[in-house]
Length: 396
Image 1 (tube, rainbow, N blue to C red):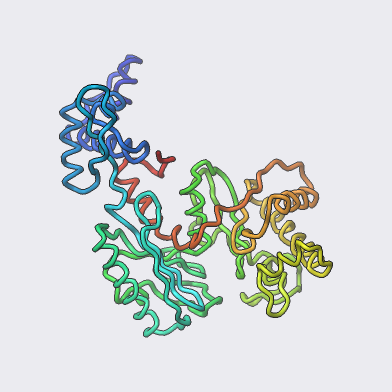
Image 2 (cartoon, rainbow, N blue to C red):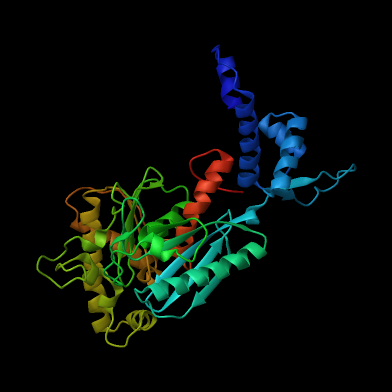
């Protein structure tokens, strides 16, 4: 706000002065934003960089320290005089918790205001669409949240990474055929949880993590080749879920009319053809498949070629609607090397009727990506609020 006033003055415009409360808020946000993005700074550096008076900076830093958002860093190296005190953004002052419920267990991850994992816990338990199961999950989350609080972080909220479509108002699961939880409400899921909570499709959550750790992404379709594939859409640097929160459900587009049955009840969907399960023989795992593939075994190469062909066709179909870049993630992506990704792009280009110019790259493929991405929904909103901007920028 202060910079806008200075620019307007240089150009000869007349602007009404900002109310004193607005000026104070703008000054506070400018200081937090600078510390968040650039790391430790002295008062003198903040003064030169932000153009604020030293008393203003001193008063704001004192208030921010009292609130726990700013802490004292290491003094600067001495140049002959007194060492200057640095001030740092307190990333662990707040945290958000992501929850993933799957057939074989529950995973909890807590992330700080930089999106860094500060706590993680897993519980091996079979998924059941029952009140007792959800109450158990609620107690597990509450216990974990208490541990996070005792470590010095305020919990912003609990975000559930869901294998299913969430209703437009975020209050229920409207399609949950994978684990049989269609109709599950957020209210039922959080009866034993006293923190704010939300649900997000697991592919959208994974895309949130892509955006957070690589803010240079502008327009892209994320294709997650999990055992149950999924997708997400990024438009203008933002996750675009659409009015019914079901954008990017590429797994149910038809690849082979009348083909293999899909769990959704239709036939020929992308899911049974592009799932990594299509690569595996009975009892075979992904590491074993790719190990044998690397040795040139013909049967494995044939299955891989067929699978790559279907994934390439899916990419072409998707890009005929959304002509952005393509991010390949999920379990299978972890085993795709650069040569395989280049081959996949060439296959897609050869199937496209148009001249194409797009980037195909691998996802960040971090552990518990969709669980972290779910938690980042709370972190993003909080950081936006204290820094006064719409989305996190590259930090430090």
